[in-house]
Image 1 (spheres, rainbow, N blue to C red):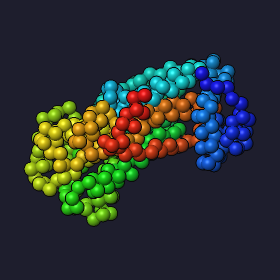
Image 2 (image 1 turned 90 degrees about the horizontal axis):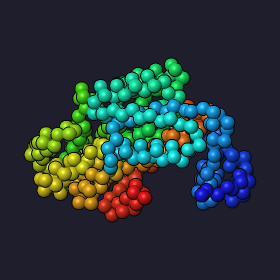
Image 3 (image 1 turned 45 degrees about the vertical axis):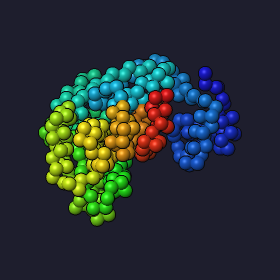
Image 4 (image 1 turned 90 degrees about the vertical axis):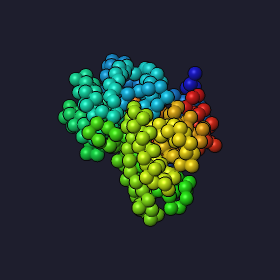
Length: 355
């Protein structure tokens, strides 16, 4: 059970004032990075659990939270976002939350529209959005703004909207890093292929747009943009995707590097394994079960990961604080670190996602 430690004791242990500890706990006012880290370190050491919910409002009111994210499957990326959300709901059990999930098919914009419509019909107190489609999300957020309903993004942010907070990573930097890893892993004059998932209307996801731009920027910076080709794969159709990979390899005999700009790298890894092409280096995203298998078997070179469970956890935590105290500045952006995972350091990360 968490220890009940007084704020003055925490301040003394962290070497800061009690006022600084109070500002950290309530997320208000300015605190230096050094003081923030010192206080958070002590909080972790003593197992302190601040009950932000002792205000009578938390016991009188039930907050209805709508959560709209892509479909969740065990072992896949969005499952970890959901796991973080559920962890936070359990952690802050003393707040009366009613959380309803509205899932959509991230490869079908019509499914997204239906889920967003259901969110609006629910008339929630707040919303957590895992966006994929730009225009559809902008329309949803315009409606939420008109109703003064706060919303928080996880995974990525959409331009021309006004969220309460954003939990994401720098997807442009992710693209640059993916390109750099390929550049370091293959012969200098090799061709590099970037694979994007096909979606309804041949549209590209918000994240993939930023990552693609990052890849392009890096390759231009090193003078290799003429070695870069773009293609796509068909989600849910192994045979069509295999034919496209085979065509790429036949047309470009010097193709030695591929980056899949989402969490479906394992699909391409499986095809490379079928073709016996371990000479082709593959960079993808997210520590999903399929990608872990590809990394262990040597058909994925590296994975770039963005701590989805933490994103989900902090989204709920921040939303609770905003609903109770209205003390979160608009457009607060929390950038997750980019973890680069190879086969050699994989065991450490497997312990994190499977505690």
